[in-house]
Image (cartoon, rainbow, N blue to C red):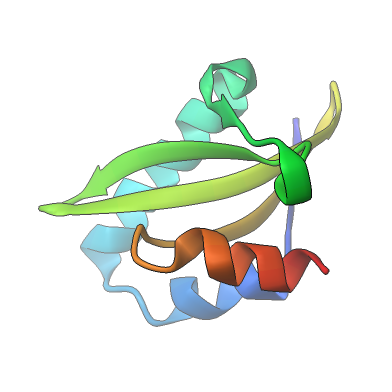
Length: 92
């Protein structure tokens, strides 16, 4: 499967520590292997799916969009606080 990333996904990843990146890699592997298990959003964020995972004691969200059966586009990753507001702004 091909994974595409957006700048809003890459920016916070650059600032993460090695252990955090390993936890994120595990979450991405889960998304790639089971893209249909995440929560699908409606309304302004229709078509966006959000996978929740723990990064240490922090609850993080990973937003992505399944483009077709061979491509997934990673939109954004971050803590739950203001996540949907920022995601909505980046999707406009």
